[in-house]
Amino acid sequence: SLTKEGEGAITATGASNLNSVAYGTELTISATPAEGYELTALTANGTDILATKKIVVKDNLTVKATFTKKSFAVSLTKEGEGTISATGASNLNSVAYGTELTINATPAEGYELVSITAGGTDITATKKVVVTGNLTITVNLTKNNFAVSLTKEGEGTITATGATSLNAVAYGTELTIVATPAAGYELVSITAGGTDITASKKVVVTGNLTVKAT
Image (cartoon, rainbow, N blue to C red):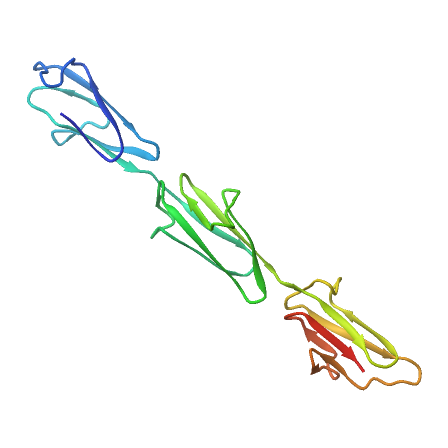
């Protein structure tokens, strides 16, 4: 008799009828794993025949093929700051074929999630992937950008250094404010989001911001 564990097919050649096999007949066993499985054991009445796949019949016989799901390595990588993890498997170094993983990506403060790819395929929308081979999952996290507006009361000029475009200033950027009074005027105060920065003339951008020179 031919039995199996796992998914695949097992057949024998060398006899036309496995219910009545003549003494001394040599059988050749063919064991074909299903997709995502591999043949890990082949026994005849408990004796290992995996290497030869042949057995000489001398008695009633049970041949068993064991098919095991293939396991693959999944690596998590990130660009930018934040944390990433995967649920659905206890060990990412050995993930069974067909396992569905859910990717968890949490941006650090001031960052946002841009994309998640699995083997180059975008899975940002679902954050899920079915493992069918070794896999690299890449999470792209980028700094948030904020708008900084410069305003003034009275006559003079106000500029900022530290960013190339005040319409898109990356989170955490330190700006230095340069406020130059016109003739006959003096600088009384500089505020950033209502906070006085006259002394330092510096501000770290953590959100949309209005800087005012008076």
